[in-house]
Amino acid sequence: MGNVRWVISVLLGVGIFISSIDRITVSLTADALAHDFGLNKAGFGLLIGSFSITYSLCQIPIGLILDRYGVQAVGRVTTFFAGAAFLCGGLAPNLPFLFISRGATGLAESSGFPRSAKAIGYWFPTHERGMATAIFETMVKSAHIVAVPFEALLVTGYGWRTAFVVNAILCFSYCILFFSLYHDPSKHPKLSRAEHESIVRGGAQPEGSGPSIKIGDRLKHFLRQPKVWGLTIGFASYGYGFGMLAAWLPTYLESTFRIPLMQAALYSTIPWISATACGFLIGGRFVDHLIVRGHSITKVRKGVMSAGLMLASAFIAAGLTHDLRTALFYLAIAMGGLALHGTVAWTIPGLIAPKGHLATIGGIMNTFMNLNAFLGQVLTGFIVNWTGSFSLALALAGTIPIIGIISYFTLLGKIEPLPDVPVRP
View 1: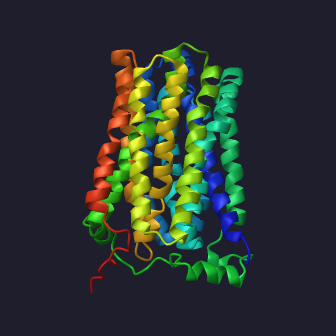
View 2 (view 1 turned 180 degrees about the horizontal axis):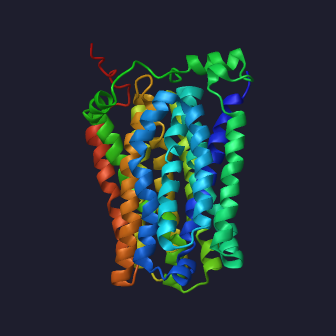
């Protein structure tokens, strides 16, 4: 039948992997930027947040744009500008310019997850969505395994500017790759008729933009749906801990346990290995296996998402220990839980969105998740400056996911398509 759909999934994953390297690089530059620009921990948190706030605020607009113009056109434009913005960061002559470049990078990379979720909706039957989503979603976590030691070597050996320029080259290379390889199923030159028919029969999202509806009417319709808020609040509760650890993990290990940055970078891969394995094997393969065997889509997906958020309470224990190995053990449990939650959560927009609105719903849920990640990144900087410790920040990361579990069981309801957006005459 062919496996073009899996090539597309890997292509999307490579894009998420490269955009994740960008954020990893910045997370390793706290000491270098303190030396070059006199940036303290609170200021470093604000620098990281300058990316997150523009990334977050662009999620709904980019979702609407994706639903209007499609994955192919938007992906080509945004991948090019991501490379340009990151290159400008590496050439920044002063701190204000660096802040502006980080904000521009957040804007350019904002399409990554909604774009990937929309493409997976087009390319995969419902019973393969878990694995397909796991391939691109776990790339965020696996990037920390592969890229953290490499980026730490670049930053410590050649300087943070060199690391920025190398990553810009990766972004431009991916732009060329995406331009060459990505097409929607109906236009892909190498997709066989048998594979296309199997995708469509399996419940893939119909291609196209759907009926022409005013942006305000579309947003108003979805923001009135309890199901959308159930998904959004649940997904947002995952953002605090994920955002905090993605930005601060090497710095946390370095400052708390008094180890060199390179050693901290190597140790920081352990929680991300756990996250990658849990997201791929449980959030992806195991969930698809249960659904193929006839188990309820709603019970399986809600159960796994809630269990993942429950495991995030291990953050609290990590903040209470003074032993490096014990802290890494609890962080691995917490990040594994968050990863399997995130993998499953990204399959939900494709299962509840009416035709032509998948990226809009994905944009809504990702807006609030990234705003909470922004809060975790910035608030952590102020907490550490104030208390001299990461304990309180980790306690918050382990407590907030409880809100998500409540949301899934009170607002999300049955995982089924939402009513179409009414078309006004």
